[in-house]
Amino acid sequence: MEEVVERVSARVPDWQTVSGVKKRTSKAAAIHEIVHADEARRITPDKELNRVLGGGIVPGSLVLIGGEPGIGKSTLMLQLALNMPDTRTLYISGEESEQQLKMRAERLSQASKADCFILTETATQHIFKQINTVAPHLVIIDSIQTLHSAHIDAAPGSVSQVRECTAELLQFAKETAIPVFIVGHITKDGAIAGPKVLEHMVDTVLQFEGDRHHAYRILRAVKNRFGAATELGIYEMQGSGLREVSNPSEILLSQREGNMSGIAIAVLLEGMRPMLIEVQALVGNSAYGTPQRSSNGFDTKRMNMLLAVLEKRFGFRLSAQDVFLNIAGGLRVEDPAIDLAVIIAIISSQQDIPVSATIAFAGEVGLSGEIRAVNRIEQRIAEAEKLGFETIYISKYNTKGLDSSKYQISIRAVAKVEEVFQAVFG
Image 1 (cartoon, rainbow, N blue to C red):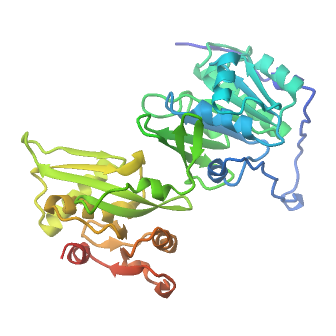
Image 2 (image 1 turned 135 degrees about the vertical axis):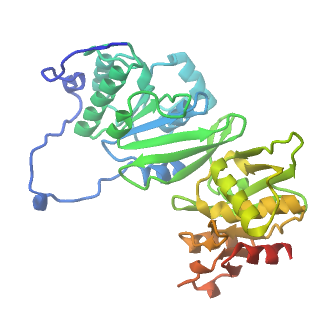
């Protein structure tokens, strides 16, 4: 479908008519004359959001948050607007009415905040007029696909409108130092709807993930110009809103009675945060001729590679058996350090031999069956020790420079997978 786009080079953006905010002026400067000073971030009451943003909200930043419908994006943003101390916030919604937002705020028990303003509007020129009136310290847009600019002759949500509205908000944020959060819809493939340039324009891209059938939600930084792009925040969805989960390891480890086969504990790292998660495997004879391979929260292709290693290098006959793998808690992990726990859980289930609940694993498995080193091993060991584990298996290549005497936990350094099999299964 063709879209008629107006030439915008000669016009003045709507936000520049706003008189109530201080606009920055810029001029060329020699790099040696530039004085570098860290801008004071706005620290939010939400420690998980602070972690993912890299330490708080940077003045003038444009943050895009995407996620599936009903996952809790609007709840997270409304909680931010309602809980920011000494901050005048403007929450702009193009999807809900003022009454709906009031009801949501009452459910969050924060409906009495005096300096949180609600605006239900989709036209950018009217939005900037209200910004002039309210003079907020923080602006939240829910969602960018509902906005439309009069300078573009296209429907709201179209590629041209999304790009133009984002460009206006970006210029507004940069020249006024007012941070802006924008909520974005996602496609059926999980990508943020609209032009790919949208993710390049903003400073930070956050992905809000989770299964609506589980209580836990994950806020993941996909891109961050002001911090690490691998940080992770975990929330629990409750009737009164989203609750921060400060110690996810205790939640991701299920409370089980006695030892059961097919379960192993992995120590992974998400950003700077070490976590212990439970890897569950179920191996059984195929009843339909063609073996099934299914994984939840773990890359299926990588699981197939690990199964091939077990069959080729160690003689486990898995080609005629169904293999199901699950990461407890609905978490999706990509850290290769989970490999060792995955193969231990698979063999535990096949042989029906339980693994002690006091053992943790942290190691990447190579195609020849070697156990490769993983990064930040000290943090992983300390987290396992803190949660009461007695033994942790790591790669012997991680022991260089490692002072094991400062840990109470028993550190078992191994080079090959068969060494772990002998120690764990006898």
